[in-house]
Image 1: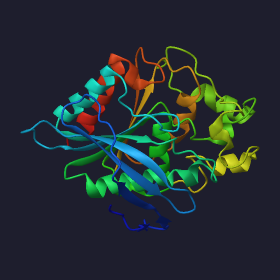
Image 2: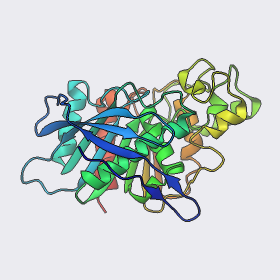
Image 3: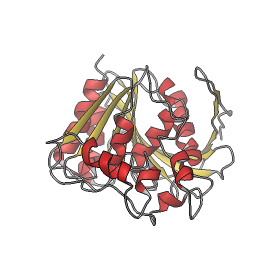
Image 4: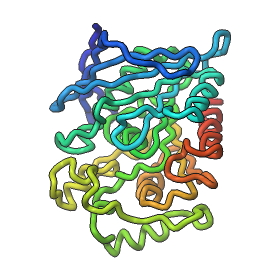
Length: 311
């Protein structure tokens, strides 16, 4: 078994400490996708219990020019793989055929564990992403995409953990719904958020009217404490007061489903609209919250990867 030494990362004006990764001998099962293997790891982060994660790694077909690596993340707590059904497994096969190593992660039990908040717990993904970059990535562009909760992992990785240092392209989809927990984790939207929510989505892009709040009972609202204050919720958000909003090395391509009628679109846009470095915001027709669930969504993701890595 191999361990990754603890990393201390120091961008321009601040430092963050990541955790460690240990390879485990226990086997795991690969999906019916050609050239795919599975490996099991244990990820430890400062102040958090270690948890296991499985990686399904799909190699490009033999003879295909290598363009880079694409890391994929499922939603909610990330306890399942991104490619669980045949159409999405076909998407993985297509991306591999484009010349990318595809890494699909699934956390055992999920990465949200009520150990001090989402911001703290998101160190696990930042640590895993760094390990993949160091151990599996072998040149070309380094790309991460994730839907809903998976987009939250990417959001924290960029605003909190300095992972813009390694990501060439990030494609958050359907969120992150935790960009502003202080707006979303309430029984009724504040007048400030109600006004912003009504105008933050560009006109003519949606095929329904999105909601504005998650409510107070959602598990992501209770990661810091069962009854958090508004300040605690803000401090635990992707857009926390110290959030970094410029990523000179990373191109961001946000994808939203035009039929995503919940709060993830307006809440996610509270981060997307504030990013000051290169970004694209696209709305996918005929597509709900699960971007990968429609042909249009899968095509939009392929196009974003292709265009974002062409330079």
